Amino acid sequence: MTSPSHSTDGLPHDGLPHDGLSHDGRPHDGPPYDGLILGASLATLDAAAGYGEIADAALAWRDGRIAWLGPRAQLPAAPEALAAQVIQAEGWITPGLIDCHTHLVFAGDRAREFELRLNGASYEEIARAGGGIVSSVRAVRDADEDELLRQSLPRARALIGDGATTLEIKSGYGLDFDNERKMLRVARRLGERLGVRVRTTYLAAHALPPEYQGRADEYIDAACEWLPRLHAEGLVDAVDAFCEGIGFSPAQTTRMFEAARALGLPVKLHADQLSDLGGGALAAAFDGLSADHVEHTSLDSVRAMAAHGTVAVLLPGAFHVLRETRLPPLDAFREHGVAMAVATDCNPGTSPLLSLRQAMQLSCTHFKLTPEQALRGATVHAARALGLADAGALRVGASADFVLWDIRHPAELCYWLGGRLAQRVFCAGRQVA
Ligand code: DI6
Ligand code: FE
View 1 (cartoon, rainbow, N blue to C red):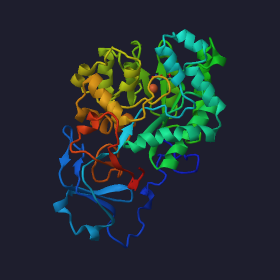
View 2: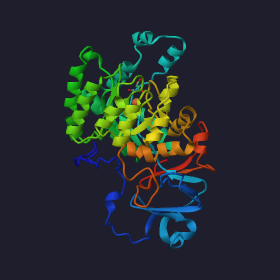
View 3: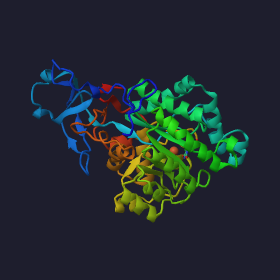
View 4: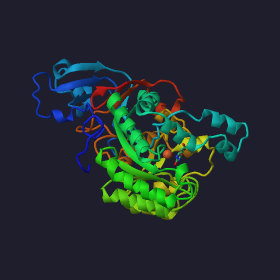
């Protein structure tokens, strides 16, 4: 963490308003644990490979953190003596899912544009009809903060109901100071309202707003100038850019990243989605947390990412919706030991995807990840892509973020298309769905 900053409601800005983590020292007169869940199998993912299965397990938490886990038969005392809340369970418990790349704060939708496209309209015709990314910018600018929150809440609830306990949320449809700020404030408020961890990412370098047409460098100057002001309000956890022919150049991206580095903020990048501009290597050069999309990433970039520990975030939702055919360099990532995360990219244009489990499913079908790799990609590796040390795996001391699933084997998480598998979702020891 960088400076001690605060969210819109003056809460600590790690995104966990009710985490109970600051209650250390509070005398506990009652049983040692706040909660205990018994009988399910655990997939801890707490080792380099495998699910980390513990059959007929028990998991206990206190003050928002996992306090004990293991086979139920090894519990140190009778369950009722250990926790006030004892839950008898069946099925499997995994770490809470981590959606490490979303644009879920937006207004309106682009369903009509989707329909026009399938009726044969070209991008130019859609743009002339007021569609495309600028239509989302217009809708965000027209909505006040409460309205933007109201429209974003059901999307966040859908992701949480399907097992997500951490949401990364980007700005990038405001494209001016007040509207980027509004988006980031809404992201913080979503975390506070729903009791999940939210990590915000400043993505002013997403698209060129109409008022800066032909003046991209001036726009980047402005976006770099807004960043410290938003950071001072505790609204920014990381910085991202869309480095692409239709986005911003590597030089412009570099300037944005330098502004981030000056504030000690980590960076991530929309890299090599439609063409290879060396985005993977650029993210790595700034010790980036992640390079995302990466369909066109070169072997040089893969090597640079491996050397700097930059995670490759796979976004199969956009790949699917855009009917892309160029696969990310999956074998090279594996060969060079680049961790692969999986995320929804939830956005109104290219990935209107409201289930991280569905993204995992798509990563198996399109990118041939195994179900175990996909689950690791939406937990352990997603945590790394956000710089989170205490989430993503079930282990003593980690945040008590976990999901009880109505399944017989973890592969089912990637097997079913749709449906409701999450029975209970806990974030920092509190039930959030
Ligand atoms: N890549 C994407 O997939 C989204 N943004 C980006 O840089 C698309 C955003 C949109 O079309 O609204
Ligand atoms: Fe994206």
